[in-house]
Amino acid sequence: MTDHYRSPEDPGPETLARADAASGLREAFVTEHLRRVFLQIYRMVGSVHDAQDLTQEAFIKALQRQDQLKDEQKAAHWLSRIATNTALDFLRRGRRVAFVELGEAPERHLESAEDSLLRGEQRDWLAAGLERLTPRERAALVLRDVEDLPAEEVARRLGCSRATVRSHIANARIKIRKYADSRGGQR
Image (tube, rainbow, N blue to C red; front, side, top):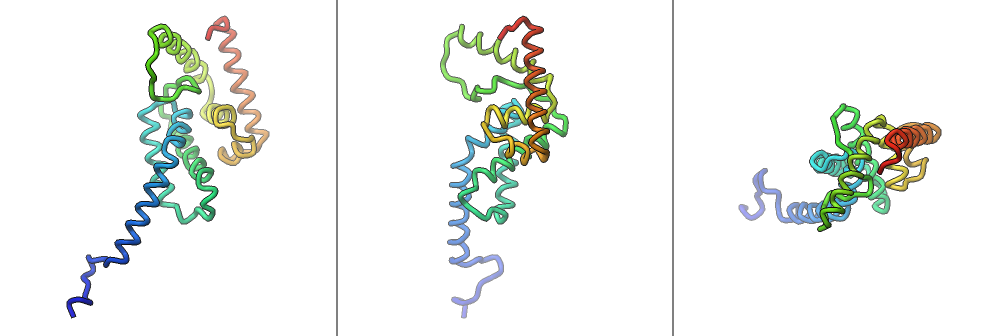
């Protein structure tokens, strides 16, 4: 009789095996997509610390909603939308962010002092230019020009029309171009 009795706290070997398998799948999912999601969010918010927090938040949301994912082939796209919305929500809440060069990864490679100084000047120039954009203009510009997403997908992620996306991107480019002209084209 004691062999067949289980207390409510004892999930049993089959349940534990399923939980271990699910945990392994979750771990593999996170490992596979972590760097890409982090870089996507980092490019939108411009802060390593905030991007780390937001990446964790995006994965928590994704894991809580994994039942919504119907096609495993579209997992990267689905997760990218969650990451975009998480970053946009952060920007809408009015957090102050510092922007960095769009192509720069957060990890630093060994570089000469001169290269480091030039990179710093470029980063400062770009940060000042990006600060002139609205959060939606920044998001549209990053998603379209950095993430290389089609305008339709950017529109879907931002919850607006393609025409609005094109307008956001055009306005962002004009503002950055005006900023560059006002600085004498320095980069």
